[in-house]
Length: 441
View 1: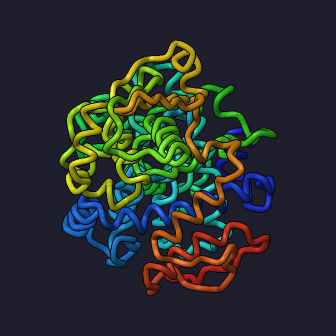
View 2 (view 1 turned 45 degrees about the vertical axis):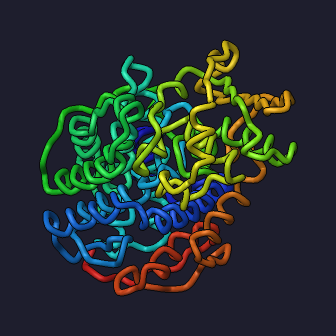
């Protein structure tokens, strides 16, 4: 078996190193939190309604409200849901979101086939690894910056093909189809002119599931450029790329997080009164300056802004889901501060991007005082020891209490929303329980 085949089809959950299993457990819990929070975003309801009309069925569950859909429709709706607040996990070198592509695809096919929870977890692990490798490969061969679905669809296809029991020939066709049909979306357009298009995670999950289902039925695809690159598609390494995935503390574009964190630290440390602030200067990397500059009126515009979240953080001492869902409700203080924020590119921060993302914030007050932050990275980076605390805080804010490990024998079908998601939190278990079979394999 080739290295690629060994990774995608041969690897079991037990083969995944403990550090990677623990990280996947954390990311699954994060997926729970962002999916619950995402139910409040208008895009989540629209996506689920669309999937119900266009992809009816009873194979898989829409996590918005428990309705049943065909597997591709569920993958689509749940991918949109998970990315609905731009609150989901990401990776610096691919500049995007693997989890919202991979997990919805794996979950939809696992439910449709009656997979075991161990099989589901193995598929998620492989999906992350393929998605991240494919993303780095795509960025290396293309000068354009594509949305996450462009490479996340390959990870979704790999996870789905495993769960469908595809052989290697079928799996290669699945990845070839996903690579060919993936949404090669110009994400920079959605960054500077935000809309519900976002990072195309729903499309990546949909393309991955659809490609695997087609390949399993004999539909052929072109050769996959990612698989043809031996260096990028090699088998498991000592360092799993999933270990380098970050989690988000704030529900908005990652590029604004360093400045938000710096602003919040300044506000708390200097006990700043928002009304006393006369000027705010942000020094960061060029990409952050691509974010929309107009005062936001929708949640998407708030998520893809640099100036607004800094203003909201300084005005309210927080940047949470409630504020991002309705940016116009922040009050006069946010509007006033928004007009006071100026952004500059720092050459050192620009040279470090995307491997590091840093910013400084300087606040001047009406009495002449000046407060400057040190260079600040976003909370939740891969080496941040507080990653678990960030995820647990997101879970608490979502109103759900999940124990660290869930090992109950349960069925994915017929469960309520919270019970369904609890299955996803069981990745830490050494011997995951069997998910009751609901259809013949």
